[in-house]
Length: 110
Length: 111
Image (cartoon, rainbow over all chains, first blue to last red; front, side):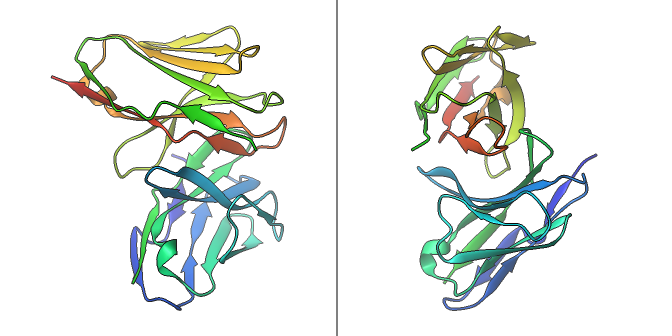
């Protein structure tokens, strides 16, 4: 069964900490995406990547960066976590327009 | 701005009822359309793709009207297990591989 794996299901971090969210896919997909999902706001695209070492800003990139050193791994970095980054973070990969999502990381910044 | 608009609901329907969800999108260049299902505290999962000719998968029927930029999902004979949030999803631009998600319509099927 194809999989997108996010390293943590729940995470609690302090304001100002640097936070790494990891995502690994085993489908040899070119495309990978990071979204955050908040009540009433739906899924919002943070960053995406169409290839190794390639990254593009989504709709809400401020306060985030990403890294794609290997095809299967796409990392989301919060340089200095803030309370307004408390959210559910969802990683997805695709070979076309059908996305497979990871199970999400619920991040709480205190 | 590329947008996908849905009625947030909630739709509370009895078992066995037929329920319809609607969605409009703003990007006329979009070529691919989908419905995703998201259970509480879970990730979204593809329910079905939507084609201009309409398509059916068991109790689920999806329709696309390109002229009106309108997508629909019909669920017949609702089951308790259909309770979820249904996301209308549109490709952000032809061949872009980016998807724009609606905020979802919540369905609760009541015994």
